[in-house]
Length: 309
Image (cartoon, rainbow, N blue to C red; front, top):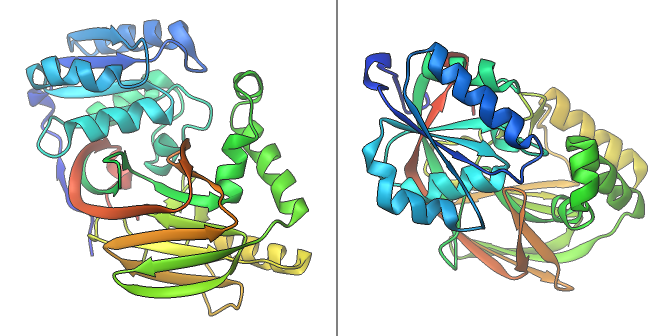
């Protein structure tokens, strides 16, 4: 299945609103760089700086419809908040790298230089992408889960994130792997329930992460109207090495340490209760539920990304 997409009519991007988070890792320096880049492209750009979580959604409710495209500059939380606020039916969103992990920008193949990212998105394509929606209405783009990914976030201080960037997450995640913490997961997908031991349970919307470096599973697509549950349960160091190899080299032959389920409605329960995350933001503790919103987001993507998962 090809990605739902359309080529961006550059003549239509006559005005841009940039939603910027000054508290993000790159801060004011990147805001200045973005303004200059839009000016070189002769695209008028208004800038609004967020002051708190939820502020972007408030701003877009009042002004989002006045622009041909909305760009975000900040962490993944800022980008996801904007995407969720504009979906469905709002103008397309261009995600600029300005946070610690920049997981969404990396997943979309967006350059990690702000000027290069702007040029790639303005000259690129538009993709329609599924969203996940949690029980409280919060939306996610990449995925939600418990285990190593949530531990990475909970175990990474803001100061360490500012200093080390994405490596801060890697260090925290590696510490979790070495402790080999496992839990009992009860996963219900469209009414069918599986219970098993796990180290990670991920409700994935994107199958390819980190500019194509990691592939979570076969057939996981961002535009198929489904969410995919990935349950990973490495017990030994050999299991960890084998799963890592499979994710890096797209080897998805059956494996006792890997379980996959796919559906439209997901419930994740764990024993013991654990912290959960969605798109790099802690969302509370298990249990949590998620449903898919098919093709609810309009994203600007580089033209090389139109067939990515």
